Image (cartoon, rainbow, N blue to C red; front, side):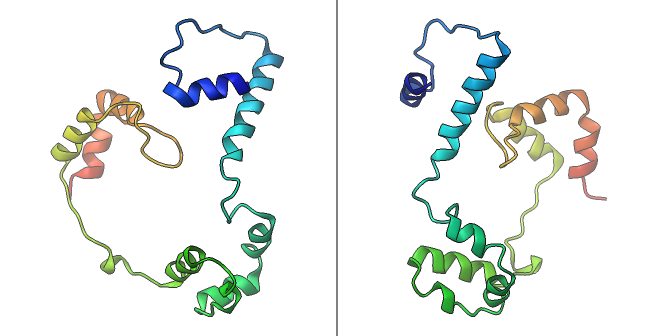
Length: 148
């Protein structure tokens, strides 16, 4: 797994000529687990996944103080962490957000232009999902993106 991980970091595996299909379930599970451990280990060194923050983020008193814009508990934190929580505490209404509008035709043109494997959200859905839906059930999107 370590060798494969390093190889994938170089060119995303595009330079590998021959892939070997693994069919043994136990080996697939082992490789997948190993890969996921490496993937999630990438957050090491960032502050929020630490044990300290895991407990702070479920501490009702801490959350309430942040909501009240009392940032005393953040005094020893980095400037980035302080800015992050200060921004979270600032209420923003929908009217303060930058408004944008686009019609179904514009949205459809965008979907057709973008690469299918491009991710669209943290859920890891990608534009390929939208392209298929656009092809198979365009009326769904037409109803969503066409004003009444």
